[in-house]
Image (cartoon, rainbow, N blue to C red; front, side, top):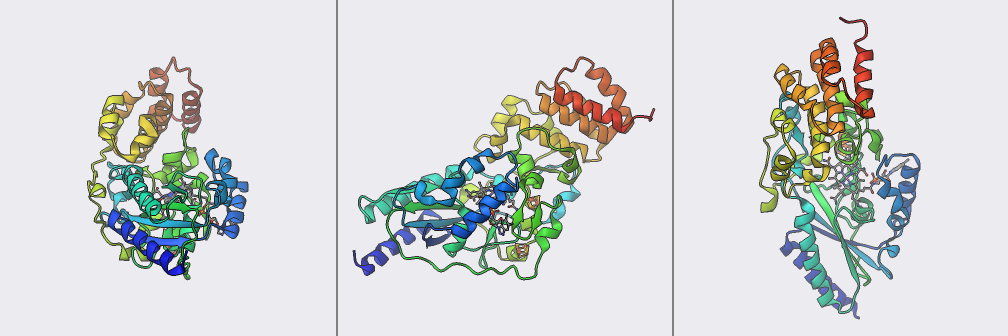
Length: 380
Ligand code: B12
Ligand code: SF4
Ligand code: SF4
């Protein structure tokens, strides 16, 4: 096929991508040797925490031809989700939970996947018989280094992709293709001497510029981690109940963020009163978070996080609600409620909890009771 034909077809695909609502488009070859080596190093350091899927997909992430045979190009796409200016003032409202900007609306997988399928159809029409594969977030591909090579932005010191034109509040997705399409120019890095993201991080999770230890990241702790949140991070989590935006909030490039035109990302659900959330039963949770990314962590994950936020709230009004939550059927929730009551009631929490949970059998909860007993030993 002539180069001019390929260029014309690629232009049509790009136009279609923008018409479908993507707001960034770039193309790269699938080779990512250097990023692949660093990724393996990252796994070896244990920085993936309990995200076993990251190690399981190691070979594929390092070599996209294991994902799509004869792969020649990867089309990388950006979808802006910036809806409202966000500062650090959520810390001044400890009675409310903070939820990451990306999770305030409809689940992005549900919005972006049908668009990728449409784009895939256009590519199939332009290059008859070609093979393609689409991914948004969950596939075994290193989306950030690929998008950097495709010119969409650069991987910043906080390890997110950011761009000169709109900052970093966007999702990535891609179409893998077995046709060689014209490559875009890789983006340059503009972090310079800035280190705002490293300095603001409440848990020092950015252990070196461009290196994140997930075990310490609040996003990992509140979304990915299924079990008990290690006690050393609970205070630092503050009132963040789903993800964390701090390293992006303080990034100077996000002052260039442009509001998204995507209606599905504009249904901002901001009323996360902790006292309401701790009272949610299964049905209430299902109704409230239908279609939201928050449903992923289930009621047990959300109420675990809410218990921590209540423990950090310094709000005595939350004590009766936490006391009631000690009866929750879910041991993970009870365990974190024990900690929260210890924070709010101090030594007075011990006799109360001992009496209320006299028949407790679950080892997770017993461990938390043991911890507050030890903490307040000698107080009466
Ligand atoms: C696993 C994962 C996480 C993990 C790990 C995050 C991370 N930094 O990788 C956790 C749960 C912590 C997480 C959190 C978030 N995530 Co996430 N996550 C992913 C996922 C599924 C894989 C990312 C991955 O491959 N990580 C592996 C590591 C190795 O990659 P890396 O950090 O880019 O690592 C590079 C650097 O470490 C670098 N490096 C440079 N020098 C050196 C030196 C050394 C010694 C080493 C070891 C490495 C190294 O090389 C590595 C390879 O390029 C992607 C989707 C995907 N399929 O790609 C989404 C993705 C990265 N997440 C996304 C989002 C939105 C978030 C959050 C903002 C959500 C939130 N608000 O809470 C936070 C941001 C936290 C942060 N500061 O990064 C978006 C990011 C969009 C963007 N603009 O970049 C993605 C792309 C999903 C999507 N499709 O839109 N996430
Ligand atoms: S998301 Fe929060 S905890 Fe994770 S690196 Fe950024 S500032 Fe730190
Ligand atoms: S805050 Fe500064 S160092 Fe961090 S990503 Fe943004 S520009 Fe880079």
